[in-house]
Amino acid sequence: MNAPAASADVRRSNLSLVLRHVDDCGPCARTEIAAATGLAHASVTAIVADLAGRGLVEEVGAGVSGGRGRPRRLLRVVSGRVWTVAVQVTHDMIRLRATDLSGVTVHTDDRRHGAPFGDPEPVAREIAGTVAGTVERAGGAQLAIVVIAVPGAVIDGKVGHAIGLGWRTTDLAALVAAHLPHVDCPVEVVNEANMAALAEYHALAAQGVKHPDTVVYATAHAGVGGCLLIGGRVHLGSHGMAGEIGHVPVSLDGPPCRCGARGCLTTYLHLRALTRAAGIPEGTGGPGPAAARAELNRRLRAGDERARAALDTAGHALGAALLAVASVTDAGEAILGGHLADWAPWLMPGIDARLAGRRTAIADVGFAVSTGVLGDDATLRGVIHVGREHVLAMPTVVPLSVSPQAGS
Image (cartoon, rainbow, N blue to C red; front, side):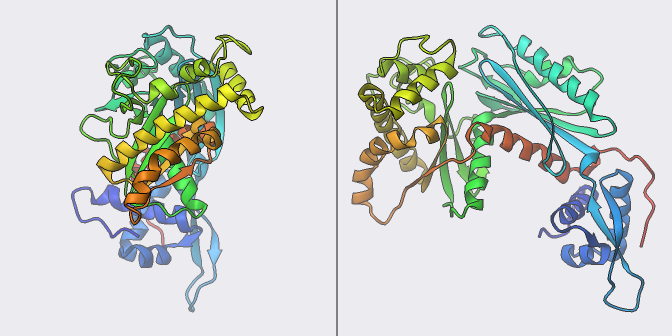
């Protein structure tokens, strides 16, 4: 439990402290909150009155008192008071999940954006349309924040570059907000791999995985992305690109990459590179990457030699990239997410072959490889977590609906 704040932000910090306690431990009484947080009972009473005035907490009956006094009045979080909106942008889709404060999904909207390569404006317009539709469904709930995950580096709140979308520096949040003049909530842009990494990290921890201090995350969908986690937090680096394993060179004279280098991991692990190596003609099974991936998966499971050889080569390339990242960062674990998790049975022999020498030479320095468990939902799960944290950290984003009245 965090200690009470003692700074200029004391009010906001203590509102957050109390709201988090009720969220974690409710229904609970004011006396219990005071004991757990270290706040004075009078302060807790005033803070609870403020949170109740914002509609974030409510009384739900009385608990048994330990003494002769009147029964304790119990408090709980009002989950439906606030909705947060999580959006994931891919090369062809927009996926939206609106959730209440408990993390329960209350609205879903998946649609194709049809934007031409290199043009973010149609994507922004489509995102705004999904958010506007969410507002209509929210009723009396407060829309607290819209968080948009994109497949590209995010620097100072802007998309620095998104190679897979063909975007250069883009203020996507401003573009979306311009189409939502009547929606009064912040719009934030984040990197999709960072969000997926956080979600997978916590999901694996919940299953009993004990993570080391430094973890590298690698994922593949249409392209290849990554993230570096230190102490369970995303490490952004100097330019927001730390952990971008897709652009680690694994061959000095390898294929040219759209980032300007040669032999990057993505040139071996990108879906198009894999299907080409597996001998799968473009358009097999239907148009688009989903059909290509399904055909590759079918051939892998059927034991097709070329498909399995393509994944084995990709595994060696991935192992080399992981070895490079581990050498620089001293990472002790890699998490394979997205389609890399699906392909792990065919990637792991190559990964292990590349790591074997280091594991033998420095046997007391371990490097584990874990497989993600959230599949295609990892990014949205991470974005939902960020939106919820925004409200818990800053309850003042929810306006007062009634004047606070101190209670006992």
